[in-house]
Length: 499
Image 1 (cartoon, rainbow, N blue to C red):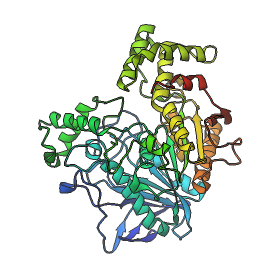
Image 2: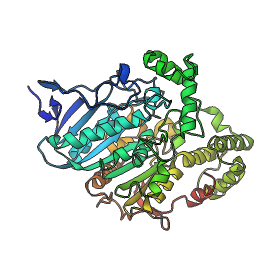
Image 3: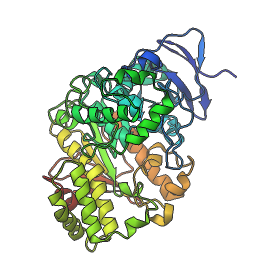
Image 4: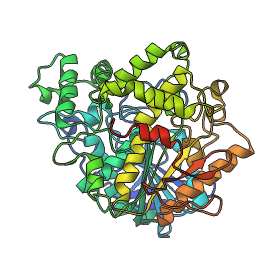
């Protein structure tokens, strides 16, 4: 039986019906970035004749294998610039659009991962969901003279332009686009707030466990690029030869330089290039670059526990080892490492009688705040100076996996936001039962409400006022959702003047 057919500006596509929604997978939003187009800004897709079958996901961007169960990205290819659309009906209904940018450290992930199936959100909220691929790692974020900069970010903008020009045919409203992403996807969202070419392509943004701080300077980005050239046996002036390097060799070289983080930043990440990204995103937001955009920002309480699962040495960390680790992380961030002892004692005092003060637990709390929660708060503060529609959340639901030792770790909110609690391994990671389903409903409805009106409040949650630097109103998502003012504020304040 034939599936639903939609006319795009490039040609007709045929999708499939799934329950109470339609799904279109593997729609090209750019010309394949191969050959001479490698390391070039994306170009519009070529039109086609006839009806294109869009019932299979496009291939994911080239990447090395993920160590996280359930996060496999499937088949890969440089020809990876495809998106997926989930819609209740392709009827010109002008529904709000939720546009998803996946995470994965800018080196992994895919819009096709089962965790990001947009069907449940589409059905529950009568919204349209778009998930995308973009170039990753060395192919998306190598910054060297002669190569276009930030092509991974420019891919996202190309997908947003495609959405602006075509989503009405799928029942979406191009004037009601909300971008959202987690981890590197959250950082990408915050970076788009500062990119001139992205302005006007979305009206709201959600940054989950990622903010406006993980970007390179031109100098630090080029240092990573030179390391990549060296790993491939190329000289510093031979960037043009990267177009001929086979993908497996490029991925191997990428893996060899992944530890070359500069200033605490991810090795491959957006960079301030003076053109596509003229300014550091946090500075641009503070000066009003996103004043027309509603913003929802948040983090999980125990982010870094996901990265350390199974590390026995972490549980045996002594006081000297803790101080050494904190000094090292501050040094990597370009901060004065002399703050280490004061930070540790501030956290120990703030947590006394409330939470564990074991050294390993303190390190998790310090690193989770340094990398995720505090940068998110800084983004809310910067944005709130220009735009009162700014909201903050804090996710504290604990994973039952590994006997509960993961806590409210990185990425745990994802199956709740998408309602994909039946995705592979999610029953063990997120849990199952009525309380899990209830929290998923509350989070989905908040994201849907935000996409619909720029305010995440809804009847299933406590009153949720906008965020400001005085009250710091924060909605805590947990077994019992609650509105708190300035949660864990002593820990937050300890970072003032440090980073």
